[in-house]
Image (cartoon, rainbow, N blue to C red; front, side):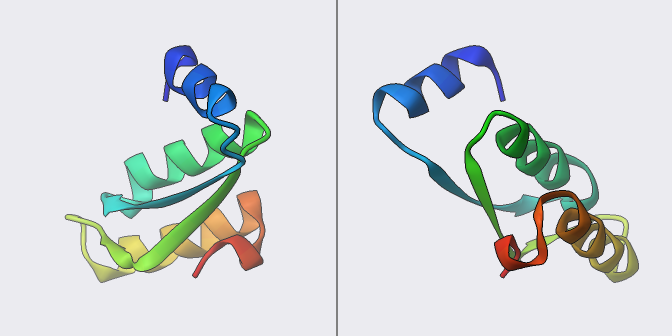
Length: 75
């Protein structure tokens, strides 16, 4: 997440971004929070995420993300 990417989203009038990826407990969480703080609605597609640290790390990250950005934004 950088200023250039956020500017591109704004230029394209994109207000919601769906996120999936590896390392739910690291990269996915960071990007979701960065988008949230930038005023863009992040939607984490948790069934398409995982963690190399195992299912417990993934599950804990999903719960943490819900607390950060709202449970309705995690699917």
